[in-house]
Length: 235
Image (tube, rainbow, N blue to C red; front, side, top):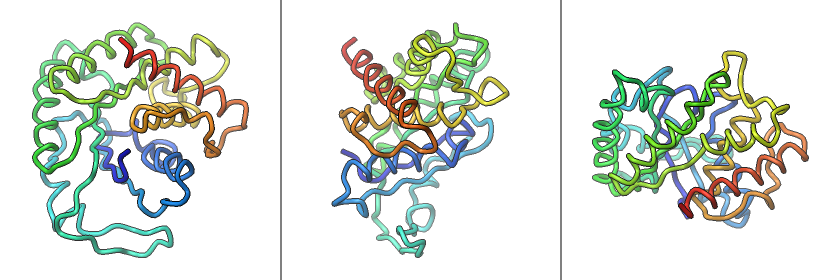
């Protein structure tokens, strides 16, 4: 059960007040007695691939882990040996399957996973979703991230498969922004619920946090996230 996390990626993470905030809210609501123990942050570069990020710099004692903010927005200086429990990483939305970029994904997923482990942090890969008008991307991305996860002994969060399941069951529910790539508020919430289910191995169905969504929509997305995680890890 990770208490501290860093999300390393791009705009798929930072849309809708950032996915790390939503995963954090789910974790804190599930464990109210230990709310203060949970912390998360994001490092995002618009459109970035994994090879854009200098992961070592994110873990240096005088860099990102030198201070944080508490629940009252006070700056809190952290210990110099402070570590993130987990690092959740994703590539650009097409990079793992693009003819000219997929080899870079294979190379840098291994490099970044090794870099994270060097600092005593558990690496996690985040499987992104297909574009709204290109559903064939779902299986392609699933294959790419699963292969990388297996090759590097890293957990994979199957958010892309959750998107496909939700769209199959509720085609009326819009998971996308107008550009057909980025997530709508419902899309970010679904991805966050899937991350929560994968990381904590428990259903988000009993979680009171539902972002900006109505209860029925949140309940549906919570169920989809849990079903997806259970199915993915059984394979």
